[in-house]
Amino acid sequence: MPRRIAAPARLRRRIFVSFVLVAGVSAAALAVGSFLLVRQSRLDDSVERSVRQTKQNLQFAGQNLPAGPTTEEVKSRLFGFFGTGGIQTLAIVGGEAVSSTAPLRSFEPPADLRALVEDGQIAYERATVDDRPSLVVGGEVPNRDVQLYFVFDESSLRDDLRELGVVLGAGWILAVLLAALAGLLLARRTLGPVARASQAARSMAEGLLDTRLPVETDDEFGAWAGSFNEMAAALEAQIAQLSEARERERRFTSDVAHELRTPLSALVGEASLLREHLDDMPEGARRPAELVVADVARLRRLVEDLMEISRFDAGRQTVRAEPLDLGSLVEATVRSRGWKDRVAVDATGVVVVSDRRRLERIVANLVGNAVEHGGRGIAIRVGRDGVGAFVEVSDRGSGIRPEDLPHLFERFYKADRSRSGPGSGLGLAIAMENARLLGGDIEVASEQGVGSRFTLRLPAVVVADLLPGGEDHVAPGPEDGSRRRERSEP
Image 1 (cartoon, helix red, strand yellow):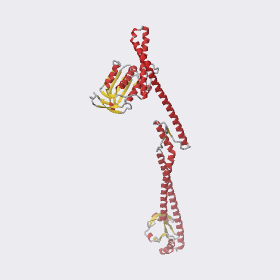
Image 2 (cartoon, rainbow, N blue to C red):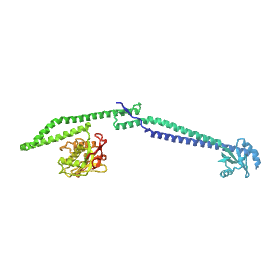
Image 3 (tube, rainbow, N blue to C red):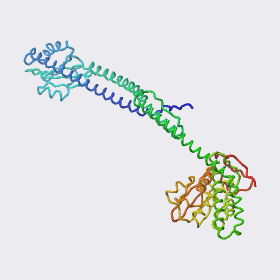
Image 4 (cartoon, rainbow, N blue to C red):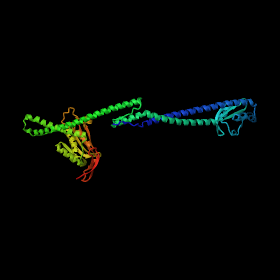
Protein backbone atom coordinates (compact mmCIF):
# COMPACT_ATOMS: atom_id res chain seq x y z
CA MET A 1 0.00 0.00 0.00
CA PRO A 2 1.53 3.41 -0.92
CA ARG A 3 2.26 5.67 1.99
CA ARG A 4 0.48 8.97 2.11
CA ILE A 5 2.83 11.90 2.76
CA ALA A 6 1.18 14.84 4.50
CA ALA A 7 1.25 18.00 2.37
CA PRO A 8 2.77 21.14 3.95
CA ALA A 9 0.19 23.50 5.38
CA ARG A 10 0.17 27.25 5.28
CA LEU A 11 0.46 27.94 8.99
CA ARG A 12 3.74 29.72 8.30
CA ARG A 13 1.90 32.75 6.96
CA ARG A 14 1.34 34.31 10.34
CA ILE A 15 4.94 33.88 11.46
CA PHE A 16 6.06 35.19 8.06
CA VAL A 17 3.93 38.31 8.42
CA SER A 18 5.13 38.80 12.01
CA PHE A 19 8.74 38.45 10.90
CA VAL A 20 8.27 41.04 8.13
CA LEU A 21 6.50 43.44 10.49
CA VAL A 22 9.23 43.18 13.11
CA ALA A 23 11.96 43.60 10.51
CA GLY A 24 10.13 46.49 8.84
CA VAL A 25 9.51 48.36 12.10
CA SER A 26 13.10 47.77 13.22
CA ALA A 27 14.51 48.97 9.90
CA ALA A 28 12.20 52.00 9.92
CA ALA A 29 13.27 52.90 13.46
CA LEU A 30 16.92 52.54 12.46
CA ALA A 31 16.44 54.65 9.31
CA VAL A 32 14.53 57.41 11.10
CA GLY A 33 17.01 57.42 13.97
CA SER A 34 19.94 57.59 11.58
CA PHE A 35 18.36 60.42 9.61
CA LEU A 36 17.62 62.46 12.72
CA LEU A 37 21.11 61.86 14.09
CA VAL A 38 22.84 62.87 10.84
CA ARG A 39 20.49 65.83 10.35
CA GLN A 40 21.19 67.18 13.82
CA SER A 41 24.91 66.66 13.38
CA ARG A 42 24.97 68.50 10.04
CA LEU A 43 22.88 71.37 11.37
CA ASP A 44 25.05 71.69 14.47
CA ASP A 45 28.17 71.65 12.30
CA SER A 46 26.70 74.38 10.10
CA VAL A 47 26.00 76.54 13.15
CA GLU A 48 29.48 75.98 14.57
CA ARG A 49 31.21 76.94 11.33
CA SER A 50 28.97 79.94 10.80
CA VAL A 51 29.47 81.26 14.34
CA ARG A 52 33.25 80.81 14.02
CA GLN A 53 33.25 82.66 10.71
CA THR A 54 31.12 85.43 12.23
CA LYS A 55 33.56 85.95 15.09
CA GLN A 56 36.42 86.27 12.61
CA ASN A 57 34.44 88.75 10.51
CA LEU A 58 33.54 90.85 13.54
CA GLN A 59 37.20 90.94 14.60
CA PHE A 60 38.21 91.96 11.08
CA ALA A 61 35.57 94.69 11.06
CA GLY A 62 36.78 96.05 14.38
CA GLN A 63 40.29 96.35 13.00
CA ASN A 64 39.34 98.03 9.73
CA LEU A 65 36.58 100.43 10.70
CA PRO A 66 37.33 103.90 12.13
CA ALA A 67 35.59 105.15 15.22
CA GLY A 68 32.10 106.37 14.34
CA PRO A 69 32.05 104.87 10.81
CA THR A 70 29.51 105.84 8.20
CA THR A 71 27.47 103.49 6.01
CA GLU A 72 29.68 104.27 3.05
CA GLU A 73 32.80 103.30 4.99
CA VAL A 74 31.16 100.02 6.05
CA LYS A 75 30.24 99.26 2.47
CA SER A 76 33.64 100.08 1.04
CA ARG A 77 35.79 98.50 3.70
CA LEU A 78 33.76 95.40 4.66
CA PHE A 79 31.24 94.27 2.05
CA GLY A 80 33.77 93.67 -0.66
CA PHE A 81 35.90 91.52 1.64
CA PHE A 82 32.95 89.54 3.02
CA GLY A 83 31.46 89.06 -0.45
CA THR A 84 34.52 87.15 -1.64
CA GLY A 85 33.46 84.29 0.64
CA GLY A 86 29.97 84.26 -0.79
CA ILE A 87 28.52 85.68 2.41
CA GLN A 88 25.67 88.19 2.26
CA THR A 89 25.95 90.88 4.89
CA LEU A 90 23.46 93.27 6.48
CA ALA A 91 24.89 96.09 8.58
CA ILE A 92 23.06 98.44 10.92
CA VAL A 93 25.07 101.59 11.42
CA GLY A 94 23.66 104.08 13.92
CA GLY A 95 20.19 102.63 13.41
CA GLU A 96 20.46 102.75 9.59
CA ALA A 97 20.44 99.40 7.69
CA VAL A 98 22.65 98.81 4.70
CA SER A 99 23.03 95.49 2.79
CA SER A 100 25.66 93.98 0.57
CA THR A 101 23.20 92.58 -1.96
CA ALA A 102 19.84 93.64 -3.32
CA PRO A 103 17.84 90.67 -1.87
CA LEU A 104 18.79 91.77 1.64
CA ARG A 105 17.38 95.31 1.27
CA SER A 106 13.92 94.09 2.25
CA PHE A 107 15.18 91.70 4.90
CA GLU A 108 14.82 92.60 8.55
CA PRO A 109 16.49 90.52 11.25
CA PRO A 110 14.03 88.79 13.55
CA ALA A 111 13.24 90.82 16.67
CA ASP A 112 14.46 88.25 19.18
CA LEU A 113 17.72 87.81 17.25
CA ARG A 114 18.25 91.60 17.13
CA ALA A 115 17.57 91.89 20.85
CA LEU A 116 20.30 89.35 21.63
CA VAL A 117 22.78 91.11 19.33
CA GLU A 118 22.06 94.49 20.94
CA ASP A 119 22.90 92.88 24.29
CA GLY A 120 26.37 92.20 22.98
CA GLN A 121 25.91 88.49 22.17
CA ILE A 122 26.61 86.54 19.03
CA ALA A 123 23.28 84.91 18.16
CA TYR A 124 21.85 82.95 15.26
CA GLU A 125 18.48 81.99 13.85
CA ARG A 126 17.31 80.07 10.79
CA ALA A 127 15.13 81.94 8.33
CA THR A 128 14.16 82.01 4.67
CA VAL A 129 16.03 84.68 2.77
CA ASP A 130 15.40 85.23 -0.92
CA ASP A 131 13.35 81.98 -0.89
CA ARG A 132 16.37 80.04 0.32
CA PRO A 133 16.83 78.29 3.65
CA SER A 134 19.50 80.27 5.45
CA LEU A 135 21.25 80.65 8.79
CA VAL A 136 21.42 84.26 10.01
CA VAL A 137 24.20 84.96 12.52
CA GLY A 138 24.56 88.42 14.07
CA GLY A 139 26.97 90.25 16.35
CA GLU A 140 28.17 93.70 17.33
CA VAL A 141 31.54 95.02 16.10
CA PRO A 142 33.81 95.62 19.13
CA ASN A 143 33.97 99.32 20.17
CA ARG A 144 31.89 100.38 17.19
CA ASP A 145 28.23 101.30 16.94
CA VAL A 146 27.81 98.76 14.16
CA GLN A 147 25.83 95.51 14.09
CA LEU A 148 26.59 92.95 11.40
CA TYR A 149 24.25 90.14 10.31
CA PHE A 150 25.72 87.45 8.07
CA VAL A 151 23.42 85.24 5.95
CA PHE A 152 24.81 81.74 5.29
CA ASP A 153 23.00 79.82 2.54
CA GLU A 154 21.99 76.28 3.69
CA SER A 155 20.36 75.14 0.43
CA SER A 156 23.07 72.58 -0.25
CA LEU A 157 22.76 71.28 3.30
CA ARG A 158 19.01 70.85 2.89
CA ASP A 159 19.55 69.10 -0.44
CA ASP A 160 22.04 66.74 1.16
CA LEU A 161 19.58 65.92 3.94
CA ARG A 162 16.82 65.34 1.39
CA GLU A 163 19.04 62.95 -0.56
CA LEU A 164 19.93 61.18 2.67
CA GLY A 165 16.22 60.71 3.41
CA VAL A 166 15.63 59.24 -0.04
CA VAL A 167 18.58 56.86 0.35
CA LEU A 168 17.44 55.74 3.79
CA GLY A 169 13.87 55.26 2.51
CA ALA A 170 15.11 53.14 -0.37
CA GLY A 171 17.29 51.23 2.05
CA TRP A 172 14.26 50.61 4.28
CA ILE A 173 12.28 49.23 1.34
CA LEU A 174 15.19 47.00 0.38
CA ALA A 175 15.54 45.83 4.00
CA VAL A 176 11.83 44.94 4.13
CA LEU A 177 12.08 43.00 0.88
CA LEU A 178 15.14 41.13 2.10
CA ALA A 179 13.39 40.46 5.44
CA ALA A 180 10.35 39.15 3.57
CA LEU A 181 12.53 36.80 1.54
CA ALA A 182 14.46 35.67 4.61
CA GLY A 183 11.23 35.30 6.61
CA LEU A 184 9.64 33.22 3.86
CA LEU A 185 12.62 30.90 3.66
CA LEU A 186 12.95 30.68 7.43
CA ALA A 187 9.23 30.09 8.00
CA ARG A 188 9.10 27.48 5.25
CA ARG A 189 12.05 25.60 6.67
CA THR A 190 11.23 26.04 10.34
CA LEU A 191 7.45 25.78 10.34
CA GLY A 192 7.08 23.50 7.33
CA PRO A 193 7.64 20.35 9.44
CA VAL A 194 5.18 21.66 12.04
CA ALA A 195 2.53 22.24 9.38
CA ARG A 196 3.13 18.79 7.90
CA ALA A 197 2.89 17.23 11.35
CA SER A 198 -0.40 19.02 11.97
CA GLN A 199 -1.80 17.80 8.65
CA ALA A 200 -0.54 14.28 9.35
CA ALA A 201 -2.20 14.25 12.77
CA ARG A 202 -5.46 15.45 11.17
CA SER A 203 -5.21 12.71 8.54
CA MET A 204 -4.70 10.09 11.24
CA ALA A 205 -7.69 11.44 13.14
CA GLU A 206 -9.72 10.91 9.96
CA GLY A 207 -8.67 7.27 9.91
CA LEU A 208 -5.75 7.40 7.46
CA LEU A 209 -3.42 5.40 9.68
CA ASP A 210 -0.82 4.93 6.94
CA THR A 211 0.06 8.65 7.03
CA ARG A 212 3.77 9.28 7.54
CA LEU A 213 6.05 12.32 7.73
CA PRO A 214 9.08 12.65 5.44
CA VAL A 215 12.40 12.57 7.33
CA GLU A 216 14.32 15.19 5.36
CA THR A 217 16.93 16.41 7.87
CA ASP A 218 18.97 15.04 10.74
CA ASP A 219 18.14 17.89 13.13
CA GLU A 220 15.46 18.10 15.82
CA PHE A 221 12.67 18.17 13.23
CA GLY A 222 14.05 15.06 11.58
CA ALA A 223 14.10 13.27 14.94
CA TRP A 224 10.59 14.52 15.60
CA ALA A 225 9.36 13.19 12.25
CA GLY A 226 11.03 9.83 12.91
CA SER A 227 9.38 9.58 16.34
CA PHE A 228 6.02 10.51 14.82
CA ASN A 229 6.37 7.81 12.18
CA GLU A 230 7.27 5.25 14.84
CA MET A 231 4.23 6.26 16.85
CA ALA A 232 2.00 6.09 13.76
CA ALA A 233 3.36 2.64 12.86
CA ALA A 234 2.79 1.36 16.39
CA LEU A 235 -0.73 2.82 16.41
CA GLU A 236 -1.49 1.30 13.02
CA ALA A 237 -0.26 -2.08 14.23
CA GLN A 238 -2.35 -1.83 17.40
CA ILE A 239 -5.46 -0.85 15.41
CA ALA A 240 -4.83 -3.73 13.02
CA GLN A 241 -4.55 -6.14 15.95
CA LEU A 242 -7.72 -4.78 17.49
CA SER A 243 -9.52 -5.06 14.15
CA GLU A 244 -8.33 -8.63 13.76
CA ALA A 245 -9.42 -9.43 17.31
CA ARG A 246 -12.81 -7.86 16.66
CA GLU A 247 -13.16 -9.79 13.43
CA ARG A 248 -12.28 -13.01 15.25
CA GLU A 249 -14.88 -12.15 17.86
CA ARG A 250 -17.47 -11.56 15.17
CA ARG A 251 -16.60 -14.84 13.46
CA PHE A 252 -16.69 -16.63 16.78
CA THR A 253 -20.12 -15.21 17.60
CA SER A 254 -21.43 -16.11 14.16
CA ASP A 255 -19.90 -19.60 14.26
CA VAL A 256 -21.22 -20.31 17.74
CA ALA A 257 -24.68 -19.13 16.79
CA HIS A 258 -24.70 -21.28 13.64
CA GLU A 259 -23.30 -24.32 15.43
CA LEU A 260 -25.93 -24.03 18.15
CA ARG A 261 -28.83 -23.89 15.74
CA THR A 262 -29.01 -27.65 15.06
CA PRO A 263 -28.81 -28.92 18.66
CA LEU A 264 -30.94 -25.99 19.77
CA SER A 265 -33.68 -26.95 17.33
CA ALA A 266 -33.70 -30.43 18.83
CA LEU A 267 -33.79 -28.97 22.35
CA VAL A 268 -36.67 -26.67 21.43
CA GLY A 269 -38.66 -29.58 20.07
CA GLU A 270 -37.94 -31.67 23.13
CA ALA A 271 -38.80 -28.76 25.45
CA SER A 272 -42.11 -28.28 23.62
CA LEU A 273 -42.89 -31.95 24.07
CA LEU A 274 -41.91 -31.73 27.72
CA ARG A 275 -44.11 -28.67 28.23
CA GLU A 276 -47.12 -30.54 26.83
CA HIS A 277 -46.71 -33.29 29.43
CA LEU A 278 -46.04 -31.13 32.48
CA ASP A 279 -49.46 -31.87 33.95
CA ASP A 280 -48.85 -35.62 33.72
CA MET A 281 -45.57 -35.46 35.64
CA PRO A 282 -45.18 -36.22 39.35
CA GLU A 283 -45.11 -33.19 41.61
CA GLY A 284 -41.39 -33.58 42.35
CA ALA A 285 -40.38 -33.64 38.68
CA ARG A 286 -42.64 -30.87 37.45
CA ARG A 287 -40.59 -27.94 38.77
CA PRO A 288 -37.26 -29.10 37.28
CA ALA A 289 -39.05 -29.69 33.97
CA GLU A 290 -40.46 -26.14 34.01
CA LEU A 291 -36.97 -24.78 34.64
CA VAL A 292 -35.60 -26.78 31.72
CA VAL A 293 -38.33 -25.46 29.42
CA ALA A 294 -37.69 -21.84 30.55
CA ASP A 295 -33.91 -22.20 30.10
CA VAL A 296 -34.33 -23.67 26.61
CA ALA A 297 -36.59 -20.75 25.67
CA ARG A 298 -33.99 -18.31 27.04
CA LEU A 299 -31.20 -20.09 25.15
CA ARG A 300 -33.27 -19.90 21.97
CA ARG A 301 -33.70 -16.15 22.34
CA LEU A 302 -29.97 -15.74 23.01
CA VAL A 303 -29.03 -17.67 19.87
CA GLU A 304 -31.51 -15.67 17.80
CA ASP A 305 -30.02 -12.46 19.16
CA LEU A 306 -26.50 -13.69 18.38
CA MET A 307 -27.55 -14.58 14.85
CA GLU A 308 -28.99 -11.11 14.32
CA ILE A 309 -25.89 -9.45 15.76
CA SER A 310 -23.67 -11.53 13.45
CA ARG A 311 -25.75 -10.40 10.46
CA PHE A 312 -25.29 -6.77 11.50
CA ASP A 313 -21.53 -7.30 11.79
CA ALA A 314 -21.38 -8.98 8.40
CA GLY A 315 -23.35 -6.14 6.77
CA ARG A 316 -25.95 -8.50 5.39
CA GLN A 317 -28.98 -6.66 6.76
CA THR A 318 -31.46 -5.31 4.24
CA VAL A 319 -34.40 -2.94 4.53
CA ARG A 320 -37.76 -3.68 2.92
CA ALA A 321 -39.51 -0.33 3.00
CA GLU A 322 -43.29 -0.03 2.81
CA PRO A 323 -45.93 2.45 4.03
CA LEU A 324 -46.89 1.61 7.63
CA ASP A 325 -49.36 3.01 10.14
CA LEU A 326 -46.97 3.40 13.05
CA GLY A 327 -49.71 3.46 15.72
CA SER A 328 -51.37 0.30 14.44
CA LEU A 329 -48.00 -1.47 14.26
CA VAL A 330 -47.26 -0.61 17.90
CA GLU A 331 -50.70 -1.76 19.07
CA ALA A 332 -50.37 -5.03 17.15
CA THR A 333 -46.91 -5.65 18.63
CA VAL A 334 -48.14 -5.11 22.18
CA ARG A 335 -51.20 -7.28 21.61
CA SER A 336 -49.30 -10.17 19.99
CA ARG A 337 -46.93 -10.46 22.95
CA GLY A 338 -49.60 -10.47 25.60
CA TRP A 339 -48.77 -7.08 27.10
CA LYS A 340 -52.10 -5.44 26.41
CA ASP A 341 -53.22 -5.53 30.03
CA ARG A 342 -49.90 -4.12 31.32
CA VAL A 343 -49.16 -1.47 28.72
CA ALA A 344 -51.22 1.65 27.88
CA VAL A 345 -50.94 2.78 24.25
CA ASP A 346 -51.74 6.31 23.05
CA ALA A 347 -51.29 6.29 19.25
CA THR A 348 -52.15 8.86 16.60
CA GLY A 349 -52.36 8.26 12.89
CA VAL A 350 -48.81 8.60 11.57
CA VAL A 351 -47.61 6.90 8.40
CA VAL A 352 -43.95 6.07 7.88
CA VAL A 353 -42.24 4.32 5.02
CA SER A 354 -40.00 1.78 6.72
CA ASP A 355 -39.34 -1.90 7.42
CA ARG A 356 -42.22 -3.55 9.32
CA ARG A 357 -40.19 -6.39 10.81
CA ARG A 358 -37.46 -4.13 12.11
CA LEU A 359 -39.90 -1.63 13.60
CA GLU A 360 -41.70 -4.48 15.38
CA ARG A 361 -38.35 -5.74 16.66
CA ILE A 362 -37.40 -2.30 18.02
CA VAL A 363 -40.78 -1.75 19.70
CA ALA A 364 -40.81 -5.27 21.16
CA ASN A 365 -37.31 -4.85 22.61
CA LEU A 366 -38.08 -1.46 24.15
CA VAL A 367 -41.41 -2.53 25.63
CA GLY A 368 -39.95 -5.87 26.76
CA ASN A 369 -37.17 -4.00 28.53
CA ALA A 370 -39.75 -1.80 30.29
CA VAL A 371 -41.85 -4.83 31.29
CA GLU A 372 -38.81 -6.67 32.61
CA HIS A 373 -37.16 -3.78 34.49
CA GLY A 374 -39.82 -1.04 34.86
CA GLY A 375 -42.58 -3.30 36.03
CA ARG A 376 -45.40 -0.79 36.40
CA GLY A 377 -46.94 2.28 34.83
CA ILE A 378 -45.77 1.34 31.34
CA ALA A 379 -47.14 3.64 28.66
CA ILE A 380 -46.47 4.02 24.94
CA ARG A 381 -47.07 7.24 23.06
CA VAL A 382 -46.92 7.39 19.25
CA GLY A 383 -46.90 10.65 17.32
CA ARG A 384 -44.72 13.16 15.57
CA ASP A 385 -43.14 16.53 16.33
CA GLY A 386 -40.83 18.99 14.65
CA VAL A 387 -38.06 16.38 14.52
CA GLY A 388 -39.99 13.46 13.03
CA ALA A 389 -42.08 10.46 14.04
CA PHE A 390 -41.51 8.98 17.49
CA VAL A 391 -42.47 6.04 19.67
CA GLU A 392 -42.04 6.84 23.37
CA VAL A 393 -41.95 4.00 25.91
CA SER A 394 -42.02 5.11 29.55
CA ASP A 395 -42.37 3.43 32.91
CA ARG A 396 -42.53 4.37 36.58
CA GLY A 397 -39.95 1.88 37.77
CA SER A 398 -36.87 2.38 39.91
CA GLY A 399 -34.97 4.17 37.12
CA ILE A 400 -31.43 3.74 35.83
CA ARG A 401 -28.26 4.88 37.53
CA PRO A 402 -26.58 7.85 35.76
CA GLU A 403 -23.32 5.91 35.35
CA ASP A 404 -25.20 3.16 33.47
CA LEU A 405 -26.93 5.43 30.94
CA PRO A 406 -23.98 5.82 28.51
CA HIS A 407 -23.58 2.00 28.30
CA LEU A 408 -27.19 0.86 27.89
CA PHE A 409 -26.87 0.17 24.16
CA GLU A 410 -23.58 -1.70 24.42
CA ARG A 411 -23.66 -5.41 23.67
CA PHE A 412 -24.04 -7.73 26.67
CA TYR A 413 -24.20 -4.78 29.03
CA LYS A 414 -26.43 -5.19 32.06
CA ALA A 415 -27.13 -2.52 34.64
CA ASP A 416 -27.62 -5.37 37.12
CA ARG A 417 -24.07 -6.04 38.30
CA SER A 418 -24.94 -9.59 39.33
CA ARG A 419 -26.19 -10.32 35.77
CA SER A 420 -28.95 -12.41 37.29
CA GLY A 421 -31.69 -11.02 35.08
CA PRO A 422 -33.35 -13.15 32.40
CA GLY A 423 -32.19 -10.97 29.49
CA SER A 424 -29.07 -11.50 27.39
CA GLY A 425 -27.95 -7.88 27.36
CA LEU A 426 -28.40 -7.72 23.57
CA GLY A 427 -31.98 -6.40 23.30
CA LEU A 428 -31.22 -2.68 23.47
CA ALA A 429 -28.10 -3.09 21.30
CA ILE A 430 -30.18 -4.82 18.61
CA ALA A 431 -32.87 -2.14 18.88
CA MET A 432 -30.27 0.60 18.35
CA GLU A 433 -28.68 -1.22 15.38
CA ASN A 434 -32.10 -1.54 13.73
CA ALA A 435 -32.97 2.11 14.45
CA ARG A 436 -29.76 3.31 12.84
CA LEU A 437 -30.33 1.01 9.87
CA LEU A 438 -33.69 2.75 9.37
CA GLY A 439 -32.07 6.17 9.61
CA GLY A 440 -33.34 6.86 13.14
CA ASP A 441 -32.09 6.87 16.69
CA ILE A 442 -33.10 5.94 20.23
CA GLU A 443 -32.95 8.44 23.08
CA VAL A 444 -33.08 7.55 26.77
CA ALA A 445 -33.82 9.61 29.86
CA SER A 446 -34.12 8.26 33.39
CA GLU A 447 -34.35 9.44 36.97
CA GLN A 448 -33.92 7.07 39.85
CA GLY A 449 -37.10 6.57 41.84
CA VAL A 450 -39.18 8.23 39.09
CA GLY A 451 -38.81 6.02 36.02
CA SER A 452 -37.31 5.80 32.56
CA ARG A 453 -38.27 6.91 29.05
CA PHE A 454 -36.97 5.43 25.78
CA THR A 455 -37.84 7.31 22.58
CA LEU A 456 -37.47 5.86 19.09
CA ARG A 457 -37.16 8.67 16.55
CA LEU A 458 -37.54 8.26 12.82
CA PRO A 459 -36.25 10.94 10.41
CA ALA A 460 -38.67 13.63 9.32
CA VAL A 461 -38.32 12.80 5.63
CA VAL A 462 -40.09 9.47 6.12
CA VAL A 463 -42.99 10.96 8.06
CA ALA A 464 -46.39 11.78 6.59
CA ASP A 465 -49.91 12.14 7.89
CA LEU A 466 -52.23 9.20 7.37
CA LEU A 467 -52.94 9.91 3.72
CA PRO A 468 -55.15 8.16 1.18
CA GLY A 469 -53.59 5.60 -1.17
CA GLY A 470 -51.55 6.69 -4.10
CA GLU A 471 -49.58 9.41 -2.30
CA ASP A 472 -45.82 9.55 -2.71
CA HIS A 473 -43.56 8.80 0.25
CA VAL A 474 -39.78 8.98 0.65
CA ALA A 475 -38.35 5.65 1.72
CA PRO A 476 -34.92 4.80 3.14
CA GLY A 477 -32.55 2.80 0.99
CA PRO A 478 -31.77 -0.81 1.89
CA GLU A 479 -28.31 -0.40 3.40
CA ASP A 480 -26.80 3.07 3.69
CA GLY A 481 -29.81 5.13 4.66
CA SER A 482 -30.08 6.68 1.18
CA ARG A 483 -33.54 7.64 0.00
CA ARG A 484 -35.58 6.28 -2.91
CA ARG A 485 -39.07 7.08 -4.15
CA GLU A 486 -41.83 4.54 -3.56
CA ARG A 487 -45.49 4.78 -4.27
CA SER A 488 -47.85 3.83 -1.48
CA GLU A 489 -50.62 1.44 -2.37
CA PRO A 490 -54.01 1.42 -0.57
